Length: 235
Image (cartoon, rainbow, N blue to C red; front, top):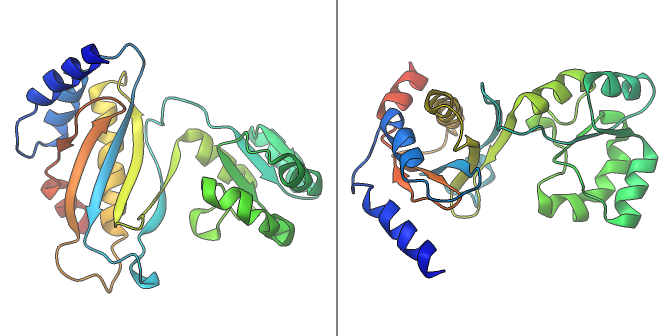
């Protein structure tokens, strides 16, 4: 533990107390890496909204151009021809009512995303207590309740991620692995930040993006200057 403490202290010391562009922050984060495993890189945004009000919740999805470095396990609950469509699209688990029963009786959640067709949502809705806390409940707003299951499966497999504000108005989203080429991480982070900026609620007043940080699993947080990205997103 003492060695890890010294390493993180050294990494933090390499980060100046200022805002960096993504183009400068990503190589710096990679340079100060001291762990032996492939850390996840995450973007955290502090937004000027009040999540207590439904009309100020910031939520959406975005497909990262370079994915997340791993293939997500996808479960599709559907009926009829949509079951075959899901299988052909590459879903890892496919089924109907039996999948609802499996989750209910076994508390089974060995998947990263759940896609459901609208006609089975009456049954899937019963899984809220199990799936809700894990962020696995399908939702029309995130494209996971749809009859176009093939497209939904392909998007999740390609690196589709969901972003939403938590109770403290923070948004935490992974944008790849520390081993990614620097430019890939820059592009993933740029696409994410752009999507969050475009999702600004109409009722939100004052400064919207109050802070942005780039970090890795064990690495230091680096403050990001989002001016250029915000300007481009609003253009």
